[in-house]
Image 1 (cartoon, rainbow, N blue to C red):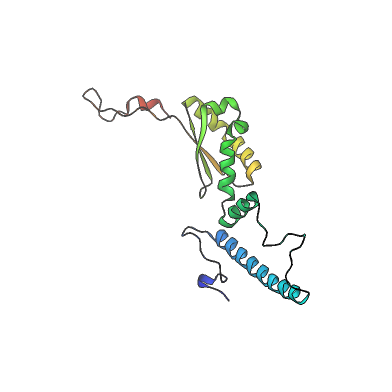
Image 2: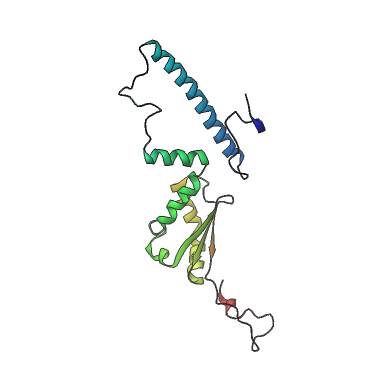
Amino acid sequence: MSGPEGLPAGARKETPESSGVDLARVALRAAKEAARARGDVAQQKKQARHGGLRSGARGDRRDPMALGAAINRLLTERGWEAPAAVGGVMGRWPEIVGEDVAKHCEPERYDEDERVLVVRCDSTAWATNLRLLAPTLVARLNEDLGHGTVRLIKVNGPGGPARRYGPLRAPGSTGPGDTYG
């Protein structure tokens, strides 16, 4: 009883970029739901023999779900655990790196495929300092998020001023951008 692409019925590829882990997660979820449905049918038959369906003191699948549980379920189903965790780290950046570093360096984005966190610093001195601290920060982030979540921290210096072209420019010169690293 399998559908297209060898997946169990009810499991389908969510996005064109889904990896094998994502597909396995979707297939497992579909299998669990099918097993739960089979169990519910058996439970309903048993209750029908003993006086019909009743509501009891214990919770069942029909009860409303708490918002936190619903969000956690959605994150798990979609495979968004790592991006959500990294997003939380970006919110706690000053706690992780310290107030002094956080004033001068801020995380810009996280590339989930490469597992690279990109950080922008406001001066080349702070960029150099953060490059020296990068291995320690990677270890601290992986301790907080789970092993292998962040493989590398890419540190960018400040953006240089806009390039101006005019009669007093030497050909091939990068101007004041030469000092920005």
